[in-house]
Amino acid sequence: MTMLIFGMILFFGAHSVSIVAHPLRERLVASMGAATWKGLYSLVSLGGLLLMISGYSVLRLEPHLVYVPPAGLRHAAALLMLPVFPLLLATYLPGRIRRIAKHPMLVAVKFWALAHLLANGMLADVLLFGGFLAWAIADRISLKRRVPRPSPAASERPYNDAIVIVVGLALYGAFAMLWHVRLFGVAPFG
Image (cartoon, rainbow, N blue to C red; front, top):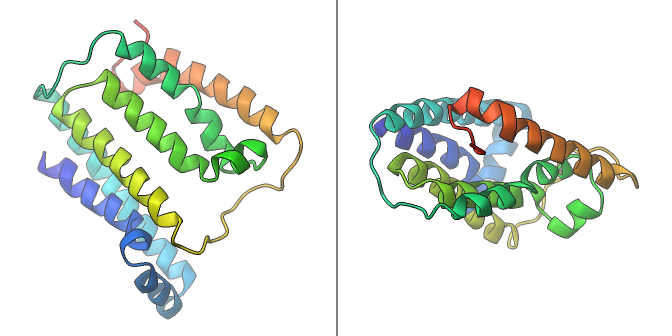
């Protein structure tokens, strides 16, 4: 559990500098340069992510039940997962979906985390997915008080929404039917 929590501290710590200390972040970027900041941010985030994955995997080997989700919540989780991949793509392919969602990546993280909390009640799941859900909510709230930074994206085109939906749903299907069981050993549908 220590590895998972330490990984979460590193990952969410790096991702939360703008939430808790935006002026500090701006001073650090100005003093060390944007490239150095991004490199350091990426290294800390990657290290945290790798520790989270390892810690989650280890904690799953010794399961500790926190709650037993009703079987019907698996269907709700599957429905909540439907928009996740399209929203992730909308982050980088601007269109009406991105405009309506405002921060599609954060909305995707919230849906993903909530879906997994509905379907899983083990301690490892509650820590990991609960942490992501809490972070995404805190980040969204803090974005209302911050000046938005430009994010990399393709230019807005009328067909971007169609691409986002078609490719996003295809990715959802491939992930749910093939990749999830191969990567995590859990078949969401069966």
